[in-house]
Amino acid sequence: MAPELYLSYPSAFLIGLLGSSHCLGMCGGISASLSMALPVGKGFRLRQTMMLLAFNAGRISSYTLIAALVALLSTSAASQWSELGGVLRTVAGLLLIAMGLSMGQWWQGIRYIEKIGAPVWQRLSPLTRRFLPVNHVGQALALGALWGWLPCGLIYTTLGWAALQPTVGSAALTMLFFGLGTLPSMLATGYAAGWIRRLQGQRLFRKVTGGLLIVFGVWTLPLTGGLAH
Image (cartoon, rainbow, N blue to C red; front, side, top):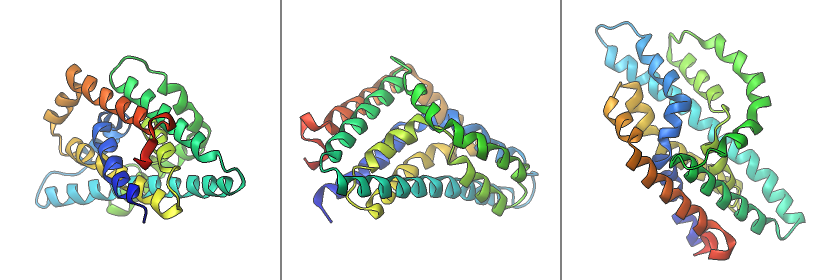
């Protein structure tokens, strides 16, 4: 394994962790509703934990699958076009910068990128109704797997970065670590931990995390040497 890949996985986790306030807006509501639908009583906390873990396992599995599909296309195209790597790195860097601007509330152009996946979501979203209300772990897992295809600028940003990986496996792992980075906030939302939402709603927190994503995006661009360094 190339040395830079060891850096990419924790970096992907960090992107998920920093950008998870965006995830709360996109997926936090459905995650919280899983807990609210459960009857309070003996074993409530265990059932709640199992539901939340199943939903998020499905969601992260979809991220990993999408990354593998994107990597299949990018590695196949790279074999035909030697300069594709530089193009992908530029796109990935610009997407990270756009996501940072969105997180910092300076510019919301990332919303236009989210429209790319709208046609796919229009076909999948009706299927989510089959698993609502969620009564058991299998339904939560299936719902999460469908919800993972929800158009999201943060996901698309990380996918652009995962496409830089040299193999399908490393791209999938990159997205897996990204998904794990979003997990703390998503679980906290499910457990109704309002303090984390208050933290991520603070202006200073959003500015700092947005700035870090912008720096990371600039670092990814070919002019700065990219991830190879």
